Amino acid sequence: MKYFDFNVGPSTRKALVTTAVGGAYFENWQTRSFPSWKRYALAHDIGIIVLQERLGVGEDLVSKNASWDKLLAPELVETLFPQLATLCLLDTDVVIGPFAPDVFLQHKEGFYGVVSQERGLPFPISQVRRRIAALRKRYYDSEFPIDSVLQASPKRIFEEHGLRSHSDYFCAGVIMLDRSQFSDLASCYRSVSPDATSRSVAWEEPFVNDWVQSRAHHWLPYEFQSIWLFEMAWSYPFLYEHRETVIDARGAREALAATLLNRHFVHFAGSWFESRVWSVMEDSAIFWDEEFERLLGEVQVAELSGRPVGRFVPED
Image (cartoon, rainbow, N blue to C red; front, side):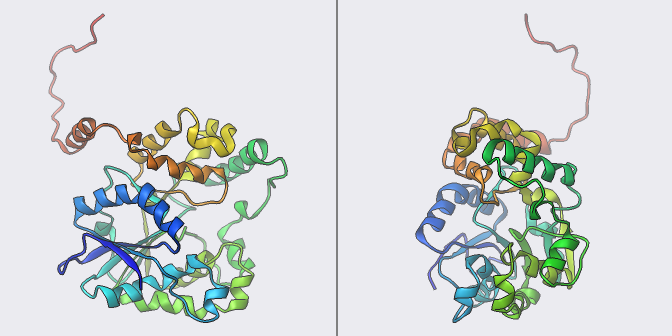
């Protein structure tokens, strides 16, 4: 098994894990996401492991694409690094903000940890989805449907896949688990037939949603998987007019920097032009200068009394 690891030692107990099969996928992760993961790992004593080969065998390699492999990753990581007790599975296109707290402090032993994309969001998700459809139709493709699976409720998604009904739904780009679930998640992978995967329009996500929500699980705050698609449509809709050149748009870097200040993990999921903003991360200038980051970090944890210091106003 070809893999990349960082900051993993004999005493390491927790790690960020992802799969990046193929040179382009690994290179994109390395140039766009790794710098923020590296800083995060060093700040919180977390390891990083990237599996670079397909994990399935036989017919599964044909019927299940590489996005399914994350379900097998914990079981394999356990054989490579038996000292690891808790993992956070991340998709490669997740970027971590400069002030993100340790996500492992959110973990509940024996529970899967996932982030809802239906509840607890800082905006009305139904209106966000409708806005995405309208913006895509107006700026991306006049044939883009207003009514599609983009607007589907969790109940509808599970019904379409012949799965048990659940009232909530998570994006599978962030999954936390510990040793008690490593083999269990692999069992989810093995339980889905090739016929079922061929009918899915959302790859592994509906199946892992049903599996996890049928077991002990808890919901992590939205900030640990903010969806850039939602953030852009709700707060930065002016970027839509730039279509495929969005990364060159004036304000794109500033919009992403602001989002990374307000959210912990930002996920660039999707196939349309919004997700191209991920490549802005190749420019290290997206973050504020180190002096300001240090100042802001100090202010966030400082004990403040609110003691008056007199009238303080800018000079004319």
